[in-house]
Amino acid sequence: MIRLLGSRGVIATAAPTDGPNTGAKLARDASRAGSEVIICYGGDGTLNEVLPGVAGEGAKLAVWAGGTANVTARDLKMPRRLSRVADVIARGKTMQICLGLASNDAASRYFLMFAGIGVDASICRGVSPRLKRVGGQFAFWVSGIKHLIAWREKPFAITVDGERYESGFSVVANGKGYGGGILMAPGARLEEPVFQIFIMPRGAGRLAYIRALINAVAGRTAATGGRLVTGRTILAADCNLEGSGETWVQLDGEPIGTLPMRFSIASEAVSIIVP
Image 1 (cartoon, rainbow, N blue to C red):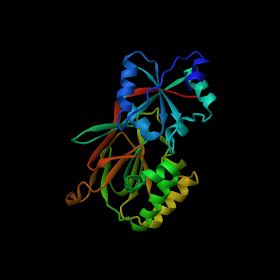
Image 2: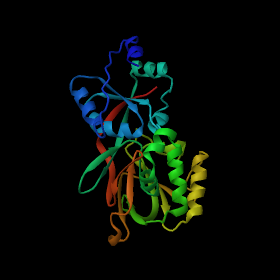
Image 3: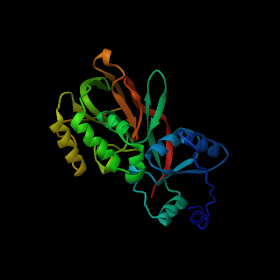
Image 4: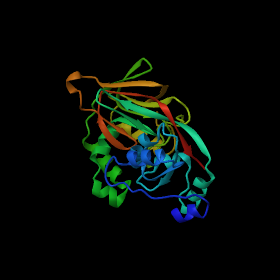
């Protein structure tokens, strides 16, 4: 990639991460040292780590798919062939995108594509790291099948711009992409400062989840048995205060903590390179 970029007039250097949560510092240091573009090679989890080092720093962000699902790269229609990725980066065409922000009393964290509340976060937690390295997305399907058999719904309340719903699973979508090519929020757009939220109602049952999954995989709306709403500020908390801390949240495919949590559009935007 460095050689290909060089032949297109772009001088690049490599800075590998050396452990979890080091991507943000590498990106921030590079931006403050004068780098015009930060290229993130990896999956959606690596990209999520890089976001704090790019947001508000001035450098453009380029996504080079190299992970398990590559949801963001798919949504942006980034090519897979190395030479074509270099072409896109060298052209430097950008789009201004909004970032999601998930926060609670302890911390806050950006997300680019989506936040999942409930069963999908539990599925992400149940993925075998070894199987993920070997089998990629297959590891998520294995964890998902196990959950369909054994998972018990943990209901929570989700409030969207003041409107309250009781849910067993919800997705707060900043972009329309989702893991495994599944379409959960067809109306979500990265460039628009508003979320589309998929809400599966409390007590929907396994068949409703299976129908929604089949529709989403087929490219149809997943709202069969659920509903799609739009909003800017979302609050989510366990219905039973005694059960607080049981419902997990994932951001861009990475589990990050439990409810309660607030989701909003971040004040910082990012210029991202697009084809």
